[in-house]
Image (cartoon, rainbow, N blue to C red; front, side, top):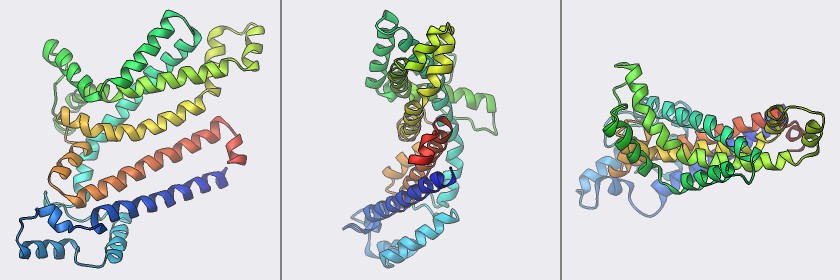
Length: 315
């Protein structure tokens, strides 16, 4: 078990290092002046020189890379060019919005998608099954920002039940802050619900063909127990895998959803930093998002070890 997790952690660390190299090379080493990218081609030479000195662009690339990685280990990420404040503080202030949003969306997707998939698999070929499959296809096809606009028109404009956007802040009003995240979380979870429900259905159909399921039914085990106790647990490995991958897509989707709903989260910070050509912020956020995705994948590997003991030996 420990050897299995150690190998997975080592692979994640190597991936993170390679990702940091790629991000650094793309933003700071490839042909082009980072200071000129940040200030524009019409900036004065003395202004460009001052910015290069301030952010260390005049130092050798290897020295800059080592300095950046050393700062990452202690969460010293430098100062933002556009905001004039430490990047670490910017991210810390925004993560308190994005993290609850992502958790709400992932929780909602899991609660809705898995029962839908089990329901469809238990009624294969029926109108209910076709309805779930049709919903899955629709959910995959509809952009989450467009779905978010529809939610605003219905729940905020027509029914006036939920706020259309904005975020009052946890210290100002916790309940109102939670209400302001409901519509964005629903918009963010639509495609995840669609994908996860289809994967659950497919995995359940494969499991329901196994001999032990037929044996349980032959022994007179109630159908609900067959589905939930015998079939679902053994179908969870591909479901957990896809759920972990979707966690990464939620982070990417948050960039658009937070912009639509005017939420001051990490996604909005990425959008603003791209517009402001704030390379320091973009570089650090990208590598931190990569680290989060790798951490989620490591948690999935831990879940594998409990769901199926075979990876402990063979992986």
